[in-house]
Amino acid sequence: MLVDIAKSPSAENSAIRLHASDNVAVARVPIPHGTELRVAGAAVAARDFIPAGHKIALREIPAGEMVLRYGQAIGRAKETIAAGRHVHTHNLGFEELQLAYEFPSVEAPVPQPQRDAPQFLGYVREDGRVGTRNYIAVAAASNCAAHTVEAIARSYEGETLPDGVDGVVAFPHGDGCGHAGGPDVELLRRTLSGVLAHPNVSAAVIVGLGCEDNQIEHYLGRGGGARLAGLTLQSSGGTRGTLEAARREIARFIGRAAEEKRTAAPASKIVLGLNCGGSDSFSGITANPALGYCSDLLAELGGTAALAETPEIFGAEHLLVRRARNREVAEKLLACIRKYRQYLGRFEGSFDDNPSPGNKAGGLTNILEKSLGAVAKGGTSRLIDVYDYAEPVTSPGLVFMNTPGYDPVSLAGLAAGGCNVIAFTTGRGSAIGFPTIPVLKIATNSDTYRRMTDNMDVDAGAIATGEESVEDVGRRIFASVMEVASGRRTCAERLGHKEFVPWRIGPVV
Image: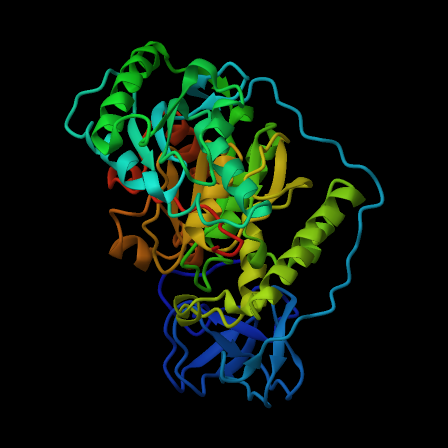
């Protein structure tokens, strides 16, 4: 896709055409007005200033004609756009496209673990899953216990824990009471159950007020056994009494966690969550395709790569349908899109509400353009299965989870599904992490990597300069995933990022 792009900008390499049919190119560097360019052998003069990451028309695009990027339609010209003009929100419209779906006609095989696969050092759990961290989790059943679980976790700050115990971390949130009964409470329970029984968690405490909708008995009755304790403020002496009671429970949990040791496990035990946030136009050129290459490597080994963010596959879902393992999986994916459209409709929303001001400043005009770059995180592998939010992920290979595009909520769903590492691409820059899961940050451009070096783990910007290929960076990401799975701390971990936001879909009553 990117060939002979020299590091220094010139007439031949300042703009990147991504597909032979594209009528726009992407500015690799800021292009001043009047600059003479040569793109794919054709000359074009910039008639506007084109910011880095933004689109320039390669020929005249008549009003009403589709604008193409990646060889795919990203919207219709609102007016006639002359060659060399800046193409963005002022002259490119959004509309829902009528996509043609190519359903699979044969059943594709499910990937199997490979012999002699690379290994990492992790914590093997009783159910066969493997943790990449070894935490004690303290989760609030409701907002009424959020302060207390934070106080419990803070009480361990400065304490020296035994080797192999990564820490005591809190899961506070603002939900759990005032819910309408039904799907909303069920979704919260599925999310909390997933983070409490996560392979990166040695043991956990669930703390409630005592009278909320989300009762702790729901979790205690699900077979948590010796690895789960439950307390309520109303029966444990209030905030201070509950803190002291929780510390007594945690003391025995820490003793057992200290006895758990990292042992060799195959790459097939990696469940890699794929997420992007603060995306820019380079996301679909550098970091996302490179992460897609890493995803393909993992899927080939029998590991799992979990794509997410339903609004950010909208307009590109036909590419995933074509790669589905069978018709049933394809239909499950399309059902996610339909249900999400209905969900947005209840609030008079649109999929195109997704691109943020930062996304647009980074050159992404609408959700179609954003989605076509976002799906690249899933590589080229077959789509093996589709999961609802926070459902346990059990299939190897590439899978999809129905989550919002909002980063902390998407990460919570992936975590509850069992992802033991998360790879997160960002163009504008993101600092998000998760309480119990390492989040590996991959910068789409070298400028963001340099500006936020404390937050970024991998620089994928060298793809845009031609210094590295997508495959080169993909292999580096895969190596980083394996190192992080074995215990190397990510930037988000070192900075103490522990964001946790469940998805609340229903009304407050």
